[in-house]
Every structure is written in C-alpha cells, then in structure tokens.
Length: 491
Image (tube, rainbow, N blue to C red; front, side):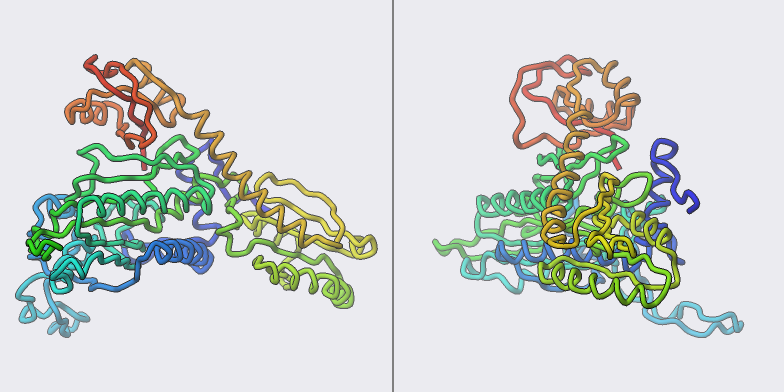
C-alpha cells in the first residue's frame, strides 16, 4: 500500500491534515471555512457527546435549545462580550431572495431588509439571559442548570479541520444561581467534569487552572480551563468554564427576590467544549500509520478479518467467528466482522490501522486447524497468536490495558516536555528547540504578558489550581513573583 501520510517529523501540520482526510473523519466543504464531518468522524463525536451528556445529567443539568439567530441589540448590552466577538460575527440583513431581473439566478430582494439585523450565534449568553429574565422571579426559581448542544459561527479565514473552523459543533452550559458561592462551585465542578472526561475517556492528560485576565472569556470575571499538550509540543485549550458573576444579569436586568425578600441580580456561569476535542484526540495519540484511538471512544473497538480463498472456507471461518462476535457484543464491545469480498485482507489491515481500530483479529485456514487467531494491537503495533478459546475475555482486558497505556504514553510525553525556566533567553531558545510547557515566573502584569506574546508567540496557558507557591522573580522584568505559570505556544 502506498504511503498515505506525510510523517509527523517531516511536517506535523500536513500530517494532521492528511490524517483527518484519509481516515475519513472530515473534509473541507464548498463553504469557505466550514467542514463536512464524515460518518466515521461523527461516530466519534457521538461517543464524546453521549459520555458528556451523561455526565451533565448526573450533575443535575437538563438540555434545552435556543435560537440560532440573535438580535444585534442583544450583543450591544454587555460591553466586554460584544468587543470580544464583534469581529467574528456573521450578520443576517435580509429575509428574502428574488429572481434577478437580468436572468442571472437569484439576488437579495432590496425591499426585504430586516428592521434589525440578526447575528448567527457566536455563543448564546445574550439570547439565553434575555430568556432567563422571564423564567426567574424568586429564589425558588433557582438554580437553572441548562445545557445546549448546538452549532455556532465565528468567522474564521485561516482554518484547520476540527481545530478552527467558521462553523463548529459544541455544547454550551448556561446556569443561573442565587449566590456567588454556588456559581463558583458550578464553574469548578464543570471544569472537573471536563478534566475527568479528557483523562478518563480521551486518554489525554490535562492541566487544570485559571486563565490570566487578558485570556479570559469576553464578559467573564474568571475563566477556568483544561490545557492539553499535543505531540508537536504545542498546547491546545480543550475546554473552558466561566464564572460570569452578575455581568449578564445586569445587562439583561435579571433580578430575583432572595429569601430575605430583597431584590438581587442573579449569578451566572457558562461552560463548553467543541468538536476541537476531535483535533485533540487525533494530535495527542496518532502516529505515522494513522489514527490511534482510545478504546472508550473508538467507533469500532475490534475488527475481525477472515482470510480465505473459497466460499466454503469463509463458511467454516464464520462458524468459529460468529460466536466470538456474539460474546464480544454481549460484553458491550463494538465489533465489526469484515467478510466483504471486494478488498484483499492486506488492504483491510492497512485501512483499519489508518482508522485507529484498537484491536484486530485475523483468522485463516491454519488458525482454524490450530484453534488460534492472530491478534494485533493498534497502539503499539504488535501481533501475537492466541487461542480462540476465551479470546473475548482476553480482549476485554486488553482494551482496558490499551486505554491506560495510551494515557500513560501521553503523560510521559508531557512530563518530558515540561521544563522549569528562570531566564528569558533560555526560555526563548527552549521554546524553539525543546517546545512543550514551560513553568516560569511572571510579574503578573498585562504589559509583560503582551511583550512575551509579541516576541515569542508563547502565551500563558493557565495558572494551575494545584500550583506550588514559590518565591521568585519574573524572567523578563526581575520583579517579585509568588508562583510559576504555564507558558506554551498554542493552537
């Protein structure tokens, strides 16, 4: 089989694009900046959705749906928010088309201009808080714990499949609380839900922490995030949870009568993850042969390929394979028995390797005689011959081992790529040569943060929650600092 992927060492960015397209995850669409998520890619997204949706419901949240279009005036109400999103908004100005009088297809009907333009949602805080105004009168109406699975639009011209597209899929939680304490607890709870999911299901180790003031979500008082490290040593923000204080309640006049009968503004949070997680999944684990998927999110966990020449050989193999398939399915393991005759086994092996199927079984005539089956592991590309008898128990344990092994490999990589630096010159040099996460002292000023960003393209990814306090001096200005923060170049 011809080499299908650019190697990571040759061109990481090209390797990623090749892989997303060749593994049938997604492709560019006719609409500039927007993607088509193909069935195999969408199957992974559905697994991500299902797990997260379950976690949201376990923590008391319910799903709802709000309009795609937001009146322009809503975005003017919260100043920081509109400033943060103004440059990315897609605007609807008319409500009708008409046939071109010159016979050149259709044109916008100039008579059909909207009285007020509508914005395709870049995020839904404004429309949701306008709605909550009608839902909330008293403390008895709180908390409101709502999540929405939706698409959003943020105008992007420099796009990359899954990582940055104009339209993308996500979930956005929007909650309303009676007290600051409750809202802060919610913000923290949800970043922990995301961290848990990233590590437990995606097998991606993450740093949990808070963003600096300049990196916060537009309109938030505090932003918590999870940061993951990709194989090229760049960071990827994989999820955020925002403490919005009373900003949106004040902007949309959402008040409630508290237990003492006094009027107060409601406290808010919002939190979200998007199809960007698909990019993280690909970049954190995959190799030059294709995808490496953690078993918990793989659409197909086990594929079985029979090797035969004649139909009667296939019939005998099927007799042995069918019970294995049934036993695996009974264990809740997704399995595909690929007995199609339009491709040779070698082609199938390469295809399932490219698609990251965690375990592959192959069985031919000799295996049939010996009561054995060839078992291949995708994560470390090993093959061994094992007995058919009890193979389903072996696979069940193996899938767990693969899940843990993929996580451990990513964790070891992150450890190796995490460096403490004290001098700005060393920081600049290592940023180019070693890459990864850098723990450095910073004086806490926006000016120093901007200087570092402009000179090196590295940003402060987060101030970790579990940070050790240590006295030091800022690597740039020499001013005192109480703790190190995490710098990296990022996506």
